[in-house]
Image 1 (spheres, one colour):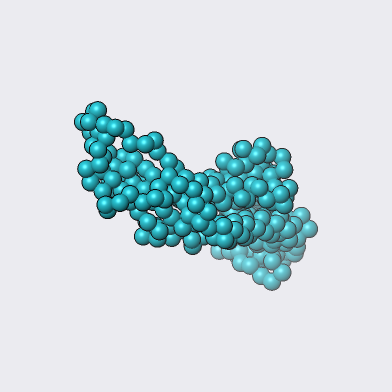
Image 2: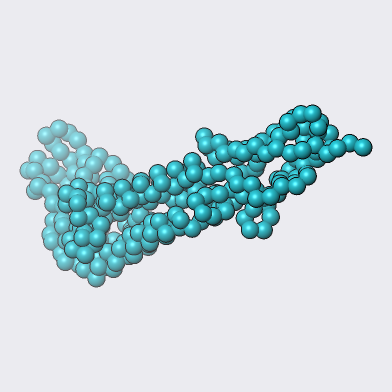
Length: 303
């Protein structure tokens, strides 16, 4: 394992306090089954936090190295990226995804194999410092298991992207567009390679562009009733967005969903004038996109 070592204590430094009498032999050594770190600082509590953070970072880096060395994963996801950039991005993603991996989320000094610290006085500048060393268990089997767990997380993200791609031509609820866009934003933030990041960004643009392709198609009309559908490509679609209705001659207007992903507009035309052009505007607002249709109706003849 990678070990953090410090220069030998200067002759003018003196150990004034220690966690135990003998200094452990593992400090500054390399061990296949554990990580050893040493951190320095003026406060014991702060330097112990630094040591824990250093252990966390070492484990994350170790996983990232193993994943970026995996030829299959690289050829699938990051073949166009510079390996050093990918390594940095992997590490960043792992830091944010680590809470989903039990071993990493459970990293704690209480799980350390050994801990040793010294309080040291420097005669040179009349100051005190703490040197805090930790030996933490982390063998090859654990590393391989963690790599497998992260690859499983990564595969799940990729499968989510594929599902969203496959649903592009088949979904029938316009509310899904907003949900998909939010999911793609999360995926875009997660993906550490430009190939998949660009895929997520392009798919988001395509979903948002669908709003401009929605139109209202009238299926049938009779006095006081109009059946219509919201159409996208070759299919009827639905939405929870309420229809806005405007008319100067119709009263009691309402829109309700009916079978076949269609809607029925009902209205009272009894007060409409036979001398006027009587219309009802059906309007849907999807963000900045306005979808509308004007229907004409004939006022009933008054007896």
